[in-house]
Image: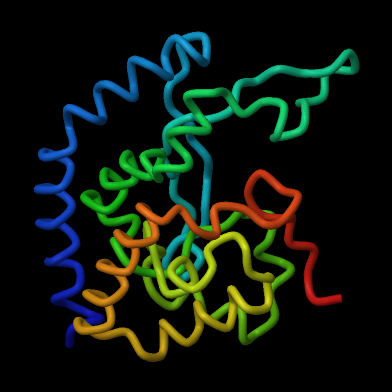
Amino acid sequence: MYKSFFKRILDFFTSLIGFILLSPVFILVTVGLFFANQGKPFFFQMRPGKNEKLFKIIKFKTMNDKKDNSGQLLPDSERLTKIGALVRKTSLDEIPQLLNVIIGDMSLIGPRPLLTQYLPLYNDFQKQRHHIRPGITGWAQINGRNAISWSQKFEYDVWYVTNCSFILDVKILFLTIKKVFVREGISQEGEVTMKVFKGNF
């Protein structure tokens, strides 16, 4: 009952209240990134949601669009702006996703929505992560975030899908707040975020 009904109601009202309270921060970061990214403060990208239905995720744009001489984007580490690095470290880049939660594409708690090109690479076990709405934060995020391996991330995601409950969501929410202040697991060693998933080879 919680997973299929009450979770969505709590998501909507909690996200709406949270967005209203964070609106001053939202405006401030938007203005800062507007100037840092040549008038582009937001990042939009298609991601798979519940039952692999695609939706457009919105985040703060923490990297610029600088390219090399051949027209290819520079590595993430070279495109990450100073204000973008601060926004990412403090997890403020996730604030716009509250809008995704409000309209029903996402949940506050759930497996993170990954890239669409990963869909053909999942095995049957990993595909279970799409049985519920993706989340702004989740069980994998409080257990290592981007610092853990892909196999560990998927294990945590599927475990959450199987064990989702109100008590677990409250636990994840409070531990997420702790993680934000401690700033753990923001990236894998030697990477700005997370290495590309290449399948189960």
